[in-house]
Image (tube, rainbow, N blue to C red; front, side, top):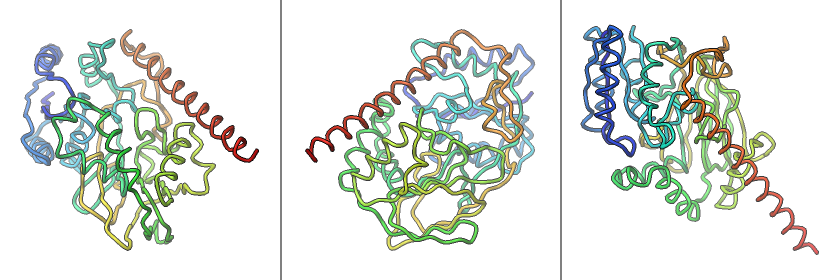
Length: 356
């Protein structure tokens, strides 16, 4: 197995060089021939991945966060090669969604366990979204979140130190100045015009470690899930966020959920765009889905709901650290659910008090 590892040193909050040496020793023992290349600038991972495919590698492994994963995937679309992932980013949403081991203080062996997935995992053909000559695995964001990503991008050192808190602080500050923009969204030839805060075109279920924006999205169904968040200002942003926390977005008349193979977005002024968290220009734009464009290694225990043919081998070997990570993630989701429920009840109480 000739494997090329593409490492984004700027990803995440830790230097993992020593851990990668241990990973390579393990893979070598299993008959692999690993080599590593470090990215030098945005977009470099795509070039390196394309070169690896053209030079006959059997697998290309993205070592980084969601942006790095998206860049590597962009270089492998249409190639007869398998892609793997070692998550070392800040958000690691792709890893959380698939159940890939992610490092934490209580799970220091996560990178080695992720390497075991490369050896023992299942291979799945998955879809990719395309915008012009660029591609995305997770989502394309238009509007509010893309502007946050653009504002954070120049401050890589701060992001590396504070992690996801950088996005939270920037998002809160930006929300107070936010105003809805009138846009036209065309899905498979059917147009709608409305004032929006955010449009999310997803190939994935998760948006944030516990925000399941598109709970029915599948990675291999040949469709993209579109979420249109309508609104005017910060009040609407807060309302949308609470509904997402409790998983009740489908009950809101101001959140429209659609599915389709092609999407066009244009409007009265340009809105910022991101692909898998990386800034990607402005609207207008055109997006389409490429069915089964990449073969990817996924854990045997990846949730079956992510794939049309199901999956999720619950009997597969999994370490104690991975089990602890899953339990902590479930506890965090429960805590966020309870917090949102308390906020909702408090709001109802305050509204009743005002009426009285």
